[in-house]
Image (cartoon, rainbow, N blue to C red; front, side):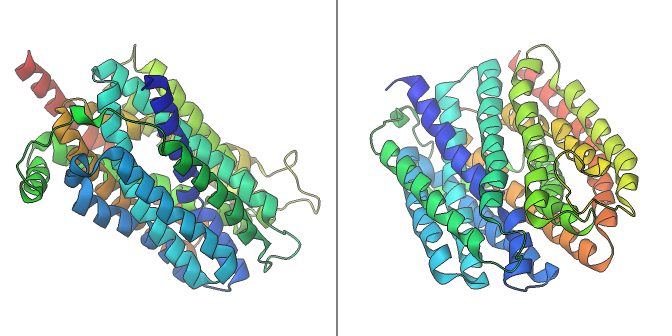
Length: 412
């Protein structure tokens, strides 16, 4: 099978799940408006998405080489296809919870399979980092397109309207297309042989990975990073709507700036990392994120907007704050590549499972904490909280560099 075609298929799946997973911010806003739920109740949607990701990854990551990466992705696509079809039919907040339960469970299968497949397609460290950033960049293009797809169906004149649920007919169609394409490709998965004799031993081998200093410093960094990204990304549409006083549709559209910055940053990081040490690049990015929070959030107080507000006359904070995505972008794929490429192929599925578990836990924690603080205090206070995990990431990056240098010295 042509390697480029396989990579294209992986990108198609990642694009779709980027759109679906990160629609949670839009769906939170629309659930508040359409179903009349509170911010605290709406924040639970992040848990319905992320907890299944963690649980399913924990249970099946080490088993996927036996099941097959292609078969696992097809199962995930089939489940999400049915969940998307149920949304406009049931039209309830309960159905929305079930949708994100399906998306989270399926994404665990998709992401472990994609990350493990990268090791097959690009075994060299430099090529691995480049392909990882490219696929994660496509994921963010999916996120970006999602804001526009949903905003097309949102009725700003009637916030309580259910028209936005019609988006899911189109998303079900994309799931069906990807499922058909997957049926006609082969991945060459026979290259990956399980290291243990049975599932139980595979599972224990995954757990033993967490005892390595390189791994537990890494998963702590990933947890904190995703806590920041999901806390900001999930609540940015509501921040735009309720703090910057923008209409619902424009609040969602403007959030696409954040996704666009993440996409540009991840696609560009593949180039930058060829000539810049990952530790230097990521340290600069974290410091820049903190400075942007400190300098930009004061612009969001006492904002007034024109009655005919549009893209050309938005409050300044609406343009500047989403640029934080540009500095966030390289952190997650660069860290993941550093750890995955240091392990043999048969361990990369298990490591991908650990990445996903702690990413999911970080995402749930970040979104729920941000939602609680947003509801009890203000959106500005909620976003200022991100400075704490940023400082902790800087400390952990130093520890991770020490462990990778030690590992490289042992290999040499």
